[in-house]
Length: 560
Image 1 (cartoon, helix red, strand yellow):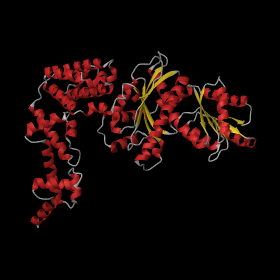
Image 2 (tube, rainbow, N blue to C red):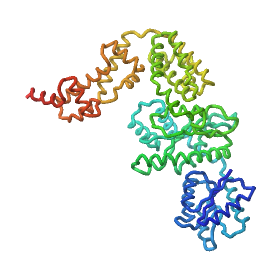
Image 3 (cartoon, rainbow, N blue to C red):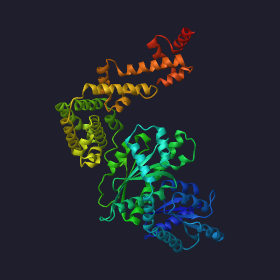
Image 4 (tube, rainbow, N blue to C red):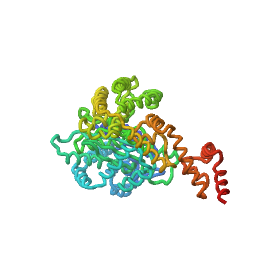
Protein backbone atom coordinates (compact mmCIF):
# COMPACT_ATOMS: atom_id res chain seq x y z
CA UNK A 1 0.00 0.00 0.00
CA UNK A 2 1.26 3.47 -0.94
CA UNK A 3 1.30 6.54 1.31
CA UNK A 4 0.29 9.99 0.08
CA UNK A 5 0.78 13.28 1.94
CA UNK A 6 -1.37 16.32 1.08
CA UNK A 7 0.17 19.70 2.03
CA UNK A 8 -1.52 23.11 1.77
CA UNK A 9 -1.97 26.09 4.07
CA UNK A 10 -5.66 26.27 3.04
CA UNK A 11 -7.59 23.61 5.04
CA UNK A 12 -10.46 23.64 2.52
CA UNK A 13 -8.14 22.48 -0.26
CA UNK A 14 -6.49 19.80 1.91
CA UNK A 15 -9.82 18.36 3.02
CA UNK A 16 -11.38 18.43 -0.45
CA UNK A 17 -8.34 16.71 -1.99
CA UNK A 18 -8.45 14.07 0.74
CA UNK A 19 -12.16 13.41 0.13
CA UNK A 20 -11.66 13.19 -3.64
CA UNK A 21 -8.81 10.69 -3.34
CA UNK A 22 -10.62 8.56 -0.77
CA UNK A 23 -13.61 8.31 -3.08
CA UNK A 24 -11.36 6.92 -5.85
CA UNK A 25 -11.82 3.27 -4.88
CA UNK A 26 -9.23 1.99 -7.38
CA UNK A 27 -6.41 3.80 -5.53
CA UNK A 28 -5.07 1.68 -2.66
CA UNK A 29 -3.29 4.11 -0.39
CA UNK A 30 -3.06 5.73 3.03
CA UNK A 31 -3.48 9.50 3.11
CA UNK A 32 -1.80 11.91 5.54
CA UNK A 33 -2.81 15.56 5.90
CA UNK A 34 -0.63 18.59 6.70
CA UNK A 35 -2.04 22.11 7.02
CA UNK A 36 1.36 23.82 7.03
CA UNK A 37 4.98 23.05 6.17
CA UNK A 38 5.98 22.23 9.75
CA UNK A 39 3.28 19.56 10.02
CA UNK A 40 4.50 18.11 6.71
CA UNK A 41 8.11 17.93 7.93
CA UNK A 42 7.03 16.25 11.18
CA UNK A 43 5.10 13.65 9.21
CA UNK A 44 8.07 12.99 6.91
CA UNK A 45 10.30 12.39 9.95
CA UNK A 46 8.03 9.66 11.27
CA UNK A 47 6.59 7.90 8.22
CA UNK A 48 7.85 6.81 4.80
CA UNK A 49 5.89 8.80 2.20
CA UNK A 50 5.69 7.67 -1.45
CA UNK A 51 3.90 10.68 -3.00
CA UNK A 52 3.46 14.29 -1.85
CA UNK A 53 0.67 16.50 -3.24
CA UNK A 54 1.77 20.02 -2.24
CA UNK A 55 0.95 23.67 -2.76
CA UNK A 56 3.88 25.35 -4.51
CA UNK A 57 3.65 28.59 -2.51
CA UNK A 58 3.16 28.48 1.29
CA UNK A 59 4.12 30.70 4.27
CA UNK A 60 7.46 29.85 5.86
CA UNK A 61 8.74 27.55 3.13
CA UNK A 62 7.90 27.21 -0.54
CA UNK A 63 6.97 23.92 -2.16
CA UNK A 64 10.35 23.98 -3.92
CA UNK A 65 12.20 24.18 -0.58
CA UNK A 66 9.96 21.47 0.87
CA UNK A 67 10.80 19.32 -2.17
CA UNK A 68 14.53 19.63 -1.38
CA UNK A 69 13.89 18.51 2.20
CA UNK A 70 11.81 15.55 1.03
CA UNK A 71 14.36 14.10 -1.39
CA UNK A 72 17.09 14.32 1.27
CA UNK A 73 15.13 11.93 3.47
CA UNK A 74 13.10 9.93 0.93
CA UNK A 75 14.93 10.03 -2.43
CA UNK A 76 12.31 7.83 -4.16
CA UNK A 77 9.37 10.03 -3.12
CA UNK A 78 7.44 11.64 -6.01
CA UNK A 79 6.05 15.21 -5.86
CA UNK A 80 2.95 16.74 -7.49
CA UNK A 81 2.67 20.52 -7.21
CA UNK A 82 -0.65 22.35 -6.91
CA UNK A 83 -0.28 25.72 -8.65
CA UNK A 84 -2.06 28.87 -9.66
CA UNK A 85 -1.93 30.31 -13.19
CA UNK A 86 1.04 32.54 -12.33
CA UNK A 87 3.17 29.66 -11.01
CA UNK A 88 3.53 27.53 -14.15
CA UNK A 89 7.04 28.75 -14.99
CA UNK A 90 8.03 28.30 -11.35
CA UNK A 91 6.71 24.71 -11.45
CA UNK A 92 8.47 23.93 -14.74
CA UNK A 93 11.76 24.99 -13.16
CA UNK A 94 11.11 22.71 -10.17
CA UNK A 95 10.32 19.70 -12.31
CA UNK A 96 13.84 19.80 -13.81
CA UNK A 97 15.39 19.15 -10.37
CA UNK A 98 14.08 15.57 -10.31
CA UNK A 99 11.38 13.86 -8.29
CA UNK A 100 8.57 16.23 -9.45
CA UNK A 101 6.27 14.23 -11.72
CA UNK A 102 3.55 16.79 -12.47
CA UNK A 103 1.97 20.13 -11.67
CA UNK A 104 -1.76 20.82 -11.80
CA UNK A 105 -4.01 23.80 -11.24
CA UNK A 106 -5.91 23.89 -7.96
CA UNK A 107 -9.20 24.45 -9.81
CA UNK A 108 -8.71 21.60 -12.29
CA UNK A 109 -11.30 18.87 -12.62
CA UNK A 110 -10.95 15.93 -10.27
CA UNK A 111 -10.04 13.57 -13.10
CA UNK A 112 -6.97 15.70 -13.99
CA UNK A 113 -5.68 15.61 -10.41
CA UNK A 114 -6.39 11.86 -10.13
CA UNK A 115 -4.53 11.29 -13.39
CA UNK A 116 -1.49 13.09 -11.93
CA UNK A 117 -1.64 10.87 -8.82
CA UNK A 118 -1.90 7.74 -10.99
CA UNK A 119 1.08 8.95 -13.04
CA UNK A 120 3.07 9.33 -9.80
CA UNK A 121 2.12 5.77 -8.79
CA UNK A 122 3.35 4.53 -12.16
CA UNK A 123 6.71 6.25 -11.65
CA UNK A 124 7.06 4.75 -8.18
CA UNK A 125 6.47 1.32 -9.71
CA UNK A 126 8.82 1.96 -12.63
CA UNK A 127 12.05 1.51 -10.67
CA UNK A 128 15.42 0.65 -12.16
CA UNK A 129 16.14 -2.89 -13.17
CA UNK A 130 17.62 -4.99 -10.36
CA UNK A 131 20.63 -5.71 -12.58
CA UNK A 132 22.01 -2.25 -11.73
CA UNK A 133 22.26 -3.23 -8.08
CA UNK A 134 23.91 -6.52 -9.00
CA UNK A 135 26.47 -4.69 -11.14
CA UNK A 136 27.25 -2.27 -8.32
CA UNK A 137 27.48 -5.20 -5.90
CA UNK A 138 29.94 -7.00 -8.18
CA UNK A 139 32.31 -4.03 -8.01
CA UNK A 140 31.96 -3.80 -4.26
CA UNK A 141 32.76 -7.49 -3.91
CA UNK A 142 36.24 -6.82 -5.30
CA UNK A 143 37.15 -4.36 -2.60
CA UNK A 144 39.11 -5.27 0.52
CA UNK A 145 37.57 -2.65 2.81
CA UNK A 146 34.32 -4.57 3.55
CA UNK A 147 36.32 -7.59 4.70
CA UNK A 148 38.47 -5.39 6.92
CA UNK A 149 35.40 -3.74 8.39
CA UNK A 150 33.81 -7.12 9.04
CA UNK A 151 36.89 -8.38 10.87
CA UNK A 152 37.10 -5.24 12.99
CA UNK A 153 33.45 -5.33 14.05
CA UNK A 154 33.37 -9.06 14.73
CA UNK A 155 36.56 -8.76 16.78
CA UNK A 156 34.73 -6.20 18.90
CA UNK A 157 31.84 -8.61 19.40
CA UNK A 158 34.17 -11.39 20.48
CA UNK A 159 36.53 -9.38 22.72
CA UNK A 160 35.12 -6.93 25.27
CA UNK A 161 38.57 -5.97 26.59
CA UNK A 162 39.61 -3.80 23.61
CA UNK A 163 40.36 -0.26 24.82
CA UNK A 164 38.41 2.76 23.46
CA UNK A 165 41.65 4.13 21.96
CA UNK A 166 42.25 0.85 20.08
CA UNK A 167 38.65 0.85 18.84
CA UNK A 168 39.07 4.36 17.45
CA UNK A 169 42.36 3.40 15.76
CA UNK A 170 40.88 0.28 14.15
CA UNK A 171 37.86 2.25 12.92
CA UNK A 172 40.19 4.70 11.21
CA UNK A 173 42.27 1.92 9.64
CA UNK A 174 39.24 0.07 8.28
CA UNK A 175 37.42 3.28 7.19
CA UNK A 176 34.45 2.70 9.48
CA UNK A 177 32.60 6.06 9.56
CA UNK A 178 30.99 5.45 12.97
CA UNK A 179 31.92 7.19 16.22
CA UNK A 180 33.66 4.94 18.72
CA UNK A 181 32.77 7.43 21.46
CA UNK A 182 29.02 6.96 20.99
CA UNK A 183 26.69 4.01 21.29
CA UNK A 184 25.55 1.99 18.27
CA UNK A 185 22.21 0.58 17.10
CA UNK A 186 22.03 -2.92 15.59
CA UNK A 187 19.79 -4.53 12.96
CA UNK A 188 20.18 -8.12 11.74
CA UNK A 189 18.84 -9.43 8.43
CA UNK A 190 18.41 -12.77 6.66
CA UNK A 191 18.05 -13.19 2.89
CA UNK A 192 15.80 -16.02 1.69
CA UNK A 193 14.85 -16.99 -1.83
CA UNK A 194 16.81 -16.71 -5.03
CA UNK A 195 17.55 -19.67 -7.26
CA UNK A 196 18.31 -22.92 -5.45
CA UNK A 197 21.10 -23.73 -7.89
CA UNK A 198 22.76 -20.33 -7.35
CA UNK A 199 26.49 -20.43 -6.69
CA UNK A 200 28.13 -19.03 -3.56
CA UNK A 201 29.27 -16.01 -5.58
CA UNK A 202 25.70 -15.35 -6.77
CA UNK A 203 24.44 -15.55 -3.19
CA UNK A 204 27.07 -13.08 -2.05
CA UNK A 205 26.11 -10.74 -4.88
CA UNK A 206 22.51 -10.81 -3.66
CA UNK A 207 23.66 -9.91 -0.16
CA UNK A 208 25.68 -6.99 -1.50
CA UNK A 209 22.75 -5.90 -3.65
CA UNK A 210 20.60 -5.80 -0.49
CA UNK A 211 23.29 -3.71 1.18
CA UNK A 212 23.27 -1.28 -1.76
CA UNK A 213 19.50 -0.88 -1.58
CA UNK A 214 19.65 -0.28 2.17
CA UNK A 215 22.47 2.22 1.59
CA UNK A 216 20.23 4.30 -0.67
CA UNK A 217 17.50 4.54 1.95
CA UNK A 218 19.69 4.93 5.04
CA UNK A 219 22.38 7.32 3.78
CA UNK A 220 20.43 10.61 3.92
CA UNK A 221 19.83 10.49 7.69
CA UNK A 222 21.80 7.59 9.17
CA UNK A 223 25.52 6.78 9.28
CA UNK A 224 25.93 3.03 8.96
CA UNK A 225 28.13 0.07 8.16
CA UNK A 226 26.79 -3.32 7.12
CA UNK A 227 28.62 -6.63 6.91
CA UNK A 228 27.65 -10.11 5.73
CA UNK A 229 28.09 -13.20 7.88
CA UNK A 230 27.33 -16.89 7.55
CA UNK A 231 25.86 -17.64 4.12
CA UNK A 232 22.76 -15.45 4.01
CA UNK A 233 22.79 -12.96 6.88
CA UNK A 234 23.62 -9.27 7.30
CA UNK A 235 24.13 -6.97 10.25
CA UNK A 236 23.85 -3.17 10.20
CA UNK A 237 25.57 -0.86 12.69
CA UNK A 238 23.72 2.49 12.82
CA UNK A 239 24.19 5.96 14.32
CA UNK A 240 22.27 9.23 13.70
CA UNK A 241 23.95 11.33 11.03
CA UNK A 242 23.65 14.39 13.28
CA UNK A 243 26.45 12.94 15.44
CA UNK A 244 28.96 13.78 12.70
CA UNK A 245 27.91 17.42 12.41
CA UNK A 246 28.37 18.51 16.03
CA UNK A 247 31.46 18.63 18.20
CA UNK A 248 29.60 18.03 21.46
CA UNK A 249 26.23 16.78 22.69
CA UNK A 250 24.43 16.96 25.99
CA UNK A 251 22.46 13.92 27.15
CA UNK A 252 19.08 15.36 26.16
CA UNK A 253 20.25 16.16 22.61
CA UNK A 254 21.76 12.72 22.22
CA UNK A 255 18.60 11.00 23.45
CA UNK A 256 16.43 13.02 21.06
CA UNK A 257 18.69 12.08 18.14
CA UNK A 258 18.42 8.38 19.04
CA UNK A 259 14.63 8.56 19.42
CA UNK A 260 14.22 10.27 16.04
CA UNK A 261 16.43 7.67 14.37
CA UNK A 262 14.60 4.75 16.00
CA UNK A 263 11.27 6.20 14.79
CA UNK A 264 12.53 6.37 11.20
CA UNK A 265 14.38 3.06 11.05
CA UNK A 266 11.25 0.90 10.98
CA UNK A 267 9.81 2.77 7.97
CA UNK A 268 13.17 2.80 6.19
CA UNK A 269 13.65 -0.95 6.59
CA UNK A 270 10.09 -1.60 5.48
CA UNK A 271 10.94 0.21 2.23
CA UNK A 272 14.19 -1.77 1.91
CA UNK A 273 12.22 -5.03 2.24
CA UNK A 274 9.74 -4.03 -0.44
CA UNK A 275 12.45 -2.90 -2.86
CA UNK A 276 14.45 -6.12 -2.41
CA UNK A 277 11.34 -8.16 -3.13
CA UNK A 278 10.46 -6.12 -6.21
CA UNK A 279 13.90 -5.80 -7.77
CA UNK A 280 15.80 -8.88 -6.59
CA UNK A 281 12.85 -11.28 -6.13
CA UNK A 282 14.04 -12.26 -2.65
CA UNK A 283 12.64 -12.18 0.87
CA UNK A 284 14.54 -10.08 3.43
CA UNK A 285 13.71 -10.67 7.11
CA UNK A 286 14.87 -8.08 9.64
CA UNK A 287 15.13 -7.82 13.43
CA UNK A 288 15.66 -4.34 14.89
CA UNK A 289 17.37 -3.73 18.23
CA UNK A 290 15.40 -2.14 21.01
CA UNK A 291 17.98 0.44 22.12
CA UNK A 292 21.52 1.52 21.21
CA UNK A 293 24.31 -0.31 23.06
CA UNK A 294 27.89 0.43 24.06
CA UNK A 295 30.55 -0.88 21.69
CA UNK A 296 31.91 -3.26 24.31
CA UNK A 297 28.42 -4.72 24.75
CA UNK A 298 28.05 -5.61 21.08
CA UNK A 299 28.49 -9.36 21.47
CA UNK A 300 25.49 -10.06 23.70
CA UNK A 301 23.20 -7.83 21.61
CA UNK A 302 24.35 -9.38 18.33
CA UNK A 303 23.85 -12.99 19.46
CA UNK A 304 20.45 -12.11 20.90
CA UNK A 305 19.16 -10.43 17.71
CA UNK A 306 20.66 -13.21 15.59
CA UNK A 307 18.78 -15.77 17.66
CA UNK A 308 15.52 -13.85 17.25
CA UNK A 309 16.10 -13.79 13.50
CA UNK A 310 16.49 -17.57 13.35
CA UNK A 311 17.90 -19.48 10.43
CA UNK A 312 14.83 -20.74 8.55
CA UNK A 313 12.55 -18.95 6.09
CA UNK A 314 9.10 -18.03 7.43
CA UNK A 315 7.00 -19.73 4.72
CA UNK A 316 8.24 -17.18 2.21
CA UNK A 317 7.09 -14.24 4.37
CA UNK A 318 9.44 -11.48 5.47
CA UNK A 319 9.95 -10.89 9.18
CA UNK A 320 10.17 -7.29 10.45
CA UNK A 321 10.18 -7.06 14.24
CA UNK A 322 11.82 -5.29 17.13
CA UNK A 323 13.19 -7.56 19.82
CA UNK A 324 10.48 -6.73 22.37
CA UNK A 325 7.72 -8.13 20.17
CA UNK A 326 8.47 -11.83 20.65
CA UNK A 327 9.46 -14.46 23.19
CA UNK A 328 7.50 -12.95 26.10
CA UNK A 329 9.85 -10.04 26.68
CA UNK A 330 7.09 -7.82 28.11
CA UNK A 331 7.52 -9.39 31.55
CA UNK A 332 7.92 -7.05 34.50
CA UNK A 333 11.31 -5.49 35.16
CA UNK A 334 11.92 -7.37 38.40
CA UNK A 335 11.45 -10.73 36.66
CA UNK A 336 13.71 -9.71 33.77
CA UNK A 337 16.60 -8.66 35.97
CA UNK A 338 16.48 -11.46 38.53
CA UNK A 339 18.44 -14.12 36.66
CA UNK A 340 21.39 -12.06 35.47
CA UNK A 341 21.77 -10.29 38.84
CA UNK A 342 21.28 -13.31 41.09
CA UNK A 343 24.30 -13.84 43.33
CA UNK A 344 23.09 -17.37 44.03
CA UNK A 345 23.21 -18.24 40.31
CA UNK A 346 26.68 -16.75 39.97
CA UNK A 347 27.98 -18.83 42.90
CA UNK A 348 26.38 -21.98 41.50
CA UNK A 349 28.04 -21.42 38.11
CA UNK A 350 31.42 -20.89 39.79
CA UNK A 351 30.88 -24.11 41.77
CA UNK A 352 30.03 -25.95 38.54
CA UNK A 353 33.32 -24.74 37.05
CA UNK A 354 35.20 -25.95 40.13
CA UNK A 355 33.62 -29.43 39.89
CA UNK A 356 34.70 -29.57 36.24
CA UNK A 357 38.24 -28.44 37.09
CA UNK A 358 38.51 -31.09 39.86
CA UNK A 359 37.01 -33.88 37.75
CA UNK A 360 34.13 -34.47 40.23
CA UNK A 361 31.70 -36.09 37.78
CA UNK A 362 28.80 -36.90 40.10
CA UNK A 363 28.72 -33.48 41.77
CA UNK A 364 29.06 -31.80 38.36
CA UNK A 365 26.20 -33.78 36.80
CA UNK A 366 23.85 -33.16 39.72
CA UNK A 367 24.50 -29.41 39.80
CA UNK A 368 24.36 -29.14 36.00
CA UNK A 369 20.91 -30.78 35.92
CA UNK A 370 19.67 -28.45 38.67
CA UNK A 371 20.93 -25.32 36.93
CA UNK A 372 19.57 -26.24 33.51
CA UNK A 373 16.07 -26.97 34.85
CA UNK A 374 15.55 -23.79 36.87
CA UNK A 375 12.08 -22.20 36.60
CA UNK A 376 13.76 -18.91 35.59
CA UNK A 377 14.95 -20.57 32.37
CA UNK A 378 11.42 -20.63 30.96
CA UNK A 379 12.21 -17.26 29.32
CA UNK A 380 14.12 -17.28 26.04
CA UNK A 381 16.43 -14.47 27.11
CA UNK A 382 17.50 -16.37 30.22
CA UNK A 383 18.09 -19.57 28.26
CA UNK A 384 20.36 -17.61 25.92
CA UNK A 385 22.35 -16.16 28.83
CA UNK A 386 22.73 -19.52 30.62
CA UNK A 387 23.79 -21.27 27.40
CA UNK A 388 26.62 -18.82 26.73
CA UNK A 389 27.79 -18.73 30.34
CA UNK A 390 28.11 -22.51 30.50
CA UNK A 391 29.53 -23.00 27.00
CA UNK A 392 32.18 -20.30 27.50
CA UNK A 393 33.28 -21.87 30.78
CA UNK A 394 33.75 -25.20 28.93
CA UNK A 395 35.79 -23.52 26.18
CA UNK A 396 37.92 -21.69 28.75
CA UNK A 397 38.60 -24.97 30.59
CA UNK A 398 39.57 -26.71 27.34
CA UNK A 399 42.00 -23.91 26.46
CA UNK A 400 43.63 -24.00 29.92
CA UNK A 401 44.32 -27.72 29.69
CA UNK A 402 45.40 -27.56 26.03
CA UNK A 403 42.37 -29.65 25.01
CA UNK A 404 40.81 -27.10 22.67
CA UNK A 405 41.98 -28.58 19.36
CA UNK A 406 41.25 -32.11 20.51
CA UNK A 407 37.79 -31.19 21.80
CA UNK A 408 36.63 -29.47 18.65
CA UNK A 409 37.94 -32.20 16.40
CA UNK A 410 35.36 -34.37 18.19
CA UNK A 411 32.42 -31.95 18.53
CA UNK A 412 30.78 -29.30 16.36
CA UNK A 413 32.27 -25.91 17.26
CA UNK A 414 29.24 -24.09 15.83
CA UNK A 415 26.87 -25.86 18.19
CA UNK A 416 29.04 -24.98 21.17
CA UNK A 417 29.16 -21.27 20.35
CA UNK A 418 25.76 -20.68 18.72
CA UNK A 419 22.57 -21.19 20.67
CA UNK A 420 20.33 -20.92 17.62
CA UNK A 421 22.08 -23.94 16.07
CA UNK A 422 19.95 -26.10 18.40
CA UNK A 423 16.32 -26.91 17.76
CA UNK A 424 15.21 -26.42 21.38
CA UNK A 425 16.44 -25.70 24.90
CA UNK A 426 16.48 -29.40 25.75
CA UNK A 427 18.64 -30.06 22.66
CA UNK A 428 21.10 -27.39 23.78
CA UNK A 429 21.21 -28.79 27.34
CA UNK A 430 21.88 -32.32 26.07
CA UNK A 431 24.61 -31.10 23.73
CA UNK A 432 26.48 -29.18 26.44
CA UNK A 433 26.17 -32.20 28.75
CA UNK A 434 27.91 -34.28 26.05
CA UNK A 435 30.73 -31.71 25.81
CA UNK A 436 31.12 -31.73 29.61
CA UNK A 437 31.24 -35.53 29.68
CA UNK A 438 34.07 -35.51 27.15
CA UNK A 439 36.01 -32.95 29.22
CA UNK A 440 35.46 -34.88 32.44
CA UNK A 441 36.75 -38.04 30.82
CA UNK A 442 39.92 -36.20 29.84
CA UNK A 443 40.41 -34.82 33.38
CA UNK A 444 43.87 -34.84 34.86
CA UNK A 445 44.72 -33.17 38.16
CA UNK A 446 46.54 -29.90 37.64
CA UNK A 447 50.18 -30.26 38.83
CA UNK A 448 51.39 -27.96 41.58
CA UNK A 449 54.06 -26.41 39.35
CA UNK A 450 51.32 -25.27 36.93
CA UNK A 451 49.58 -23.48 39.79
CA UNK A 452 52.88 -21.87 40.74
CA UNK A 453 53.36 -20.61 37.17
CA UNK A 454 49.88 -19.09 37.36
CA UNK A 455 50.79 -17.21 40.57
CA UNK A 456 54.02 -15.99 38.97
CA UNK A 457 52.16 -14.68 35.91
CA UNK A 458 49.71 -12.86 38.20
CA UNK A 459 52.61 -11.22 40.07
CA UNK A 460 54.27 -10.14 36.82
CA UNK A 461 51.05 -8.60 35.51
CA UNK A 462 50.37 -6.74 38.76
CA UNK A 463 53.87 -5.23 38.87
CA UNK A 464 53.53 -3.89 35.30
CA UNK A 465 49.97 -2.57 35.69
CA UNK A 466 49.94 -1.04 39.18
CA UNK A 467 47.98 2.00 38.00
CA UNK A 468 45.44 0.00 36.00
CA UNK A 469 42.51 -2.33 36.63
CA UNK A 470 43.67 -5.04 39.03
CA UNK A 471 40.27 -6.22 40.13
CA UNK A 472 39.76 -9.90 40.85
CA UNK A 473 37.41 -10.09 37.85
CA UNK A 474 40.08 -8.66 35.53
CA UNK A 475 42.85 -10.93 36.81
CA UNK A 476 40.66 -14.06 36.71
CA UNK A 477 39.88 -13.33 33.06
CA UNK A 478 43.59 -13.14 32.23
CA UNK A 479 44.30 -16.61 33.64
CA UNK A 480 41.00 -18.20 32.57
CA UNK A 481 39.76 -18.94 36.10
CA UNK A 482 36.65 -17.87 37.95
CA UNK A 483 37.19 -15.04 40.49
CA UNK A 484 36.29 -17.32 43.42
CA UNK A 485 38.60 -20.10 42.27
CA UNK A 486 41.51 -17.69 41.73
CA UNK A 487 41.02 -16.09 45.15
CA UNK A 488 41.06 -19.44 46.94
CA UNK A 489 43.99 -20.76 44.90
CA UNK A 490 46.09 -17.66 45.63
CA UNK A 491 45.36 -17.87 49.38
CA UNK A 492 46.29 -21.56 49.42
CA UNK A 493 49.51 -21.07 47.44
CA UNK A 494 50.81 -17.90 49.15
CA UNK A 495 49.10 -17.75 52.52
CA UNK A 496 47.77 -14.22 51.90
CA UNK A 497 44.93 -12.53 50.05
CA UNK A 498 45.55 -11.38 46.47
CA UNK A 499 44.19 -7.92 47.33
CA UNK A 500 46.81 -7.59 50.10
CA UNK A 501 49.60 -8.41 47.65
CA UNK A 502 48.32 -5.76 45.20
CA UNK A 503 48.15 -3.12 47.95
CA UNK A 504 51.69 -3.95 49.10
CA UNK A 505 53.08 -3.57 45.59
CA UNK A 506 51.27 -0.28 45.06
CA UNK A 507 52.56 1.12 48.35
CA UNK A 508 56.16 0.05 47.60
CA UNK A 509 55.93 1.79 44.23
CA UNK A 510 54.48 4.88 45.93
CA UNK A 511 57.40 4.90 48.40
CA UNK A 512 59.87 5.00 45.52
CA UNK A 513 58.01 7.84 43.79
CA UNK A 514 57.79 9.87 47.03
CA UNK A 515 61.48 9.44 47.72
CA UNK A 516 62.97 9.91 44.26
CA UNK A 517 60.60 12.20 42.34
CA UNK A 518 59.01 15.62 42.66
CA UNK A 519 55.57 14.44 41.50
CA UNK A 520 52.58 15.71 43.40
CA UNK A 521 50.93 13.28 45.78
CA UNK A 522 47.73 13.33 43.69
CA UNK A 523 49.71 12.16 40.64
CA UNK A 524 51.47 9.43 42.64
CA UNK A 525 48.06 8.28 43.91
CA UNK A 526 46.78 7.96 40.34
CA UNK A 527 49.84 5.97 39.29
CA UNK A 528 49.25 3.68 42.23
CA UNK A 529 45.71 2.95 41.05
CA UNK A 530 43.80 5.30 43.40
CA UNK A 531 41.22 7.72 42.01
CA UNK A 532 41.58 10.23 44.86
CA UNK A 533 44.44 11.34 47.12
CA UNK A 534 42.48 10.93 50.42
CA UNK A 535 41.90 7.24 49.72
CA UNK A 536 45.59 6.82 48.89
CA UNK A 537 46.61 8.69 52.06
CA UNK A 538 44.52 6.38 54.26
CA UNK A 539 45.99 3.22 52.72
CA UNK A 540 49.54 4.57 52.97
CA UNK A 541 49.15 5.64 56.60
CA UNK A 542 47.61 2.29 57.52
CA UNK A 543 50.64 0.45 56.16
CA UNK A 544 53.50 2.80 57.18
CA UNK A 545 52.00 4.64 60.19
CA UNK A 546 52.61 8.03 58.56
CA UNK A 547 51.13 10.08 55.72
CA UNK A 548 52.77 10.21 52.26
CA UNK A 549 53.94 13.80 52.87
CA UNK A 550 55.43 12.85 56.26
CA UNK A 551 57.28 9.94 54.60
CA UNK A 552 58.66 12.24 51.88
CA UNK A 553 59.78 14.86 54.43
CA UNK A 554 61.40 12.23 56.65
CA UNK A 555 63.26 10.64 53.71
CA UNK A 556 64.71 13.98 52.55
CA UNK A 557 65.61 15.05 56.07
CA UNK A 558 67.50 11.77 56.68
CA UNK A 559 69.42 12.08 53.40
CA UNK A 560 70.37 15.67 54.06
